[in-house]
Length: 367
Image (cartoon, rainbow, N blue to C red; front, side, top):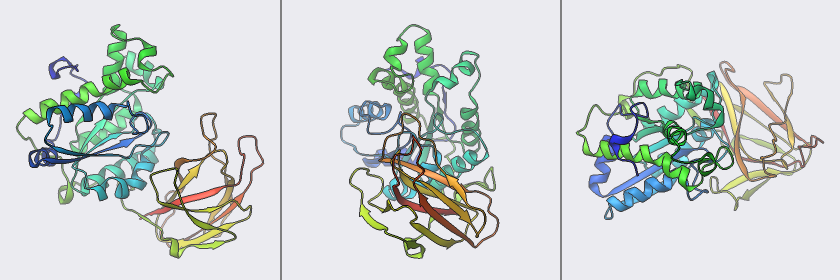
């Protein structure tokens, strides 16, 4: 591992002190959360959180560590926001490492979901650290010493809320360009690192934590009641589930236990073309979490009795047939409620659409 004085200055930005995390470490029990995409998810055992965990267990063998890795491949901050209460806050995380620079597209809605997720986590009282990894779309900016737009937007949030940030992707690119590892050793498929690349992503994280744990406390990251007003007044932090009991299901729907994905215990399922659901809700935006894939049918939806829209979704070559936990946003800025929502399952009959499944884990409204 690199020592803290061997990491370039522009990679680690310390900002607020990790006061809750340090306190938990002194007490001998730490709950550490991770949220992000495939570069962070626990499914790939050699990902960078594994090397961070290994470092902690070596230095603090008598501390009880709990690792809550809630990252899901191919998902962005909307997925994290929809699962934050269940997967991180309910687990009483002392610190959460957030990695969404790669999968989140830039734009107004993404900024709302990112800030909403950050505010929801900080309101629970946990510390946070941003971690930025790498994708090939960042290359031109980075070799020109520019920060990619996705990271620029995350840094606006990190600066405002005094959240430390670690640009692990910059560190890895520096290592490659200096000839200390090959591209194929870092990113054999162009995006996902093997163990060597993941260990290099972990190096500046460990270097930052080493320095932070040796340093006296600075001003704390604002949490709980100390949260400042939001940057974007329309952030999505005030989000809650639409209860299944308020939803009308027409056609053959069933509640079934999901044994393939760990994120939700059950889903509401149908594969019947023409099956419907409808409900009334209070809120200005609506989203749902699906078991996504090529076996998922297309569907029609509408708000307040208006014109129906078709949702088909991206079904690229890498999208599996099923068992991909993915959120879909239906509407934003709907105006004052209440609103009605209707969904009808259709097959689609297209090459990329191989079925008519509609498996829903949760539906959530943004207040």
